[in-house]
Image (tube, rainbow, N blue to C red; front, side):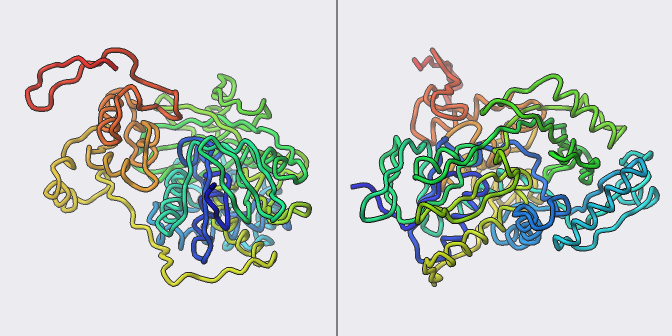
Length: 492
């Protein structure tokens, strides 16, 4: 028989993982179901990690309600879940009288949404707050509560905490059909087997419309707003998030630091065909042009990676949809979670709990719920004393595999054996940054493949770059013997 759960959550992006973490607090069995082979591979992957403060959404919208509250919750969530969060503040730069009027409107928006300490500042204060900001800026909106995270790290941390508290995680399991048995609930068909649940939470990102349709609800029409992003090599000091005056559909091209001291230029916003993740020369040029307007001395020759992804946008409202279905009992939606989705994730999880209660679902807190997830050891960031202690316990901590990010073998092994752990080269990259440096895996990828093969008990030819089928090794492979250094050929 198919496994039975009280609650199934479709979609292991940052929204679905946050909801799973929130609900494992209560006496319900939970399954998190993901179509791809890992966590945060949709919209969660294609953003700059900014925790927007909440001054941009129109007051009264679901975005406004979730954004400000989510930003507030990040301080608690980062401490409990052990992920990096830097609340740096941000500036929206203006250059004209028209810009100043827009900044005043944003300030009023933010105050209505509950964003604290917003202030319009002039050139001297701009230079004091961020010396690299364009000196031609005549005014700016200063927002102290803005910050940034690694969106992969947040989603993975929430999923790990949910699994540690008893949630099941199914990966590589796209939902292909949903039945509604006469006795109630749902049966979800996936390539990994059927799943029965009483409550279904639709957090499927770009697939939310199809999940809604299969569950018998009104079809949610989703459109694809594609964005290109550029990542620059690390800086001695991370740049404060700098925004332009926003447009009606986008916050514009933003320059920001990251928790790992890279600089990110994010993001264009173009309506394109569903699933388009190509990078476009015109979009990259728009990124560079927008970035230079904010930070004139930005050395764009230091770009190490450009990539693109999409935001699943509700066609008519351009707002978040977080609600119980009116036509399908037991179905709940967290759909249209575009920007500011990362910033809003903790609040969306909190809101979903509230919706369940309003629907009459009894949620009794578990005595054994543990909100704490300890941050894994990051060798690159560890003080010297901790590095020495780790190497003393296991010499593999001293064998550096990724030189750009100073990632040792033991850290990669730990990433593989976390639950849920890495099963691909990109999965390792997301968990411990092996391959995210300036050489972009040029030197370490073969060693990561070797470690994955060894730890997972598979041949190197079975180690994917990302999803099943994205094989890296094909054909004979020569491996040095670990003890003699002799080269032995394996048929892979």
